[in-house]
Amino acid sequence: MPTEELVRQQLATVDDPEIGKPITELGMVEQVVIEGGRVGVKIKLTIPGCPLKDTITREVTAAVSQLDDVTDVQVAFGSMTEDERTNLSSRLRAEKGSGNADMTIPFAEAGSKTRVIAIASGKGGVGKSSVTANLAVSLARKGYEVGVLDADIWGYSIPRMMGAEGRPVAFEGMVMPLQAHGVKLISIGFFTDPDRSVIWRGPMLHRALQQFLADVYWGELDFLLMDLPPGTGDVAISLAQMLPNAEMLVVTTPQPAAQKVALRAGKATEETGMNVVGVIENMTGFTDPATGTVHEIFGSGGGALLAEELDTDLLARIPIDPRLRAGSDEGTPIVVSEPDAPVSQQVDKVAEELVARAPSKVVGRSLPLNV
Image (cartoon, rainbow, N blue to C red; front, top):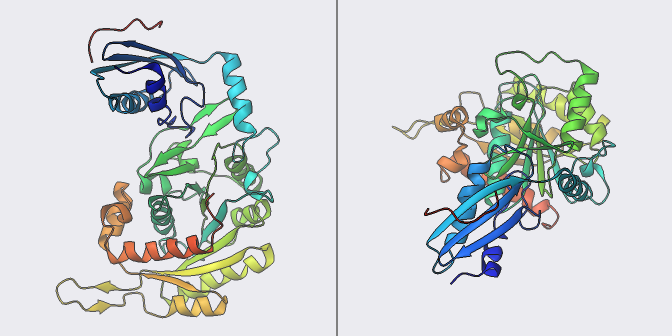
């Protein structure tokens, strides 16, 4: 027969879907009741009415059901007291990557092991956001803890490309990022009406980005990717000031006109202190599936020339593939839906290069639960 000790061992494998730590470690398991093969578990939610109760129920049930002789699992919910929430909040704030009252950005601290990479472009329409989304998922599929900060305040697109919906939950002054495809996400798109424009100037942009970095509970990340707006405006300057150790990946198309604009974005890093870690050439050519002929719709050579002028490496040449566009619209990155596609292979190549340069990774009758 299952014992309480065995049940709690299984519950230790269940992470809170927002905080990303075991529910046992967070003090969320209030009660375990066992009657023969029937097991009841009462969970204390961090906030009343948690929108992820169904997820917790499903994962607790799956974990406990793995024990021999368990015939039924029932999950009931309560909520933490104010003191319990305060104590948990204090503990999380003390950890690297948590929100904090004095707006300290953990990724800017000397001891941070998180690799912060800004994805930039000189102009819009070169596929910067789709590269960011797919690169993040590729890194996550390799076992790394990855976050994406959608810093394109006016033209945010990460929520749709990652298939993430909903509003992040605030817990004792901290914001819990949403998650999709194993990646933690934060975007202004989670807080605004999608049909209304965000009309902000410099100081408001700076404050929003600072809060995204300091007040969001990111946890221990291996990589934080930031999807920058095109060009070299307020957002890029603010992020360079907040994260002086960040690196930059520059995305361009093969077209010479796009390369020249991207060059200005890359050169701007010399003034902000960011290091350009590489260049990605997107939309490099389209292969006719009927004949195998490659059509260089946007010209050729722009990526290699940009890498040469920035004295860095051309990390990938990503071909045109309608499935990449479709996946971005449907919220399923192509590295998930078509992992063997040439586009996915090129994205994986970039992920492998970044990893090589990164620091080491760190059902039955009710049971007598006191509801």
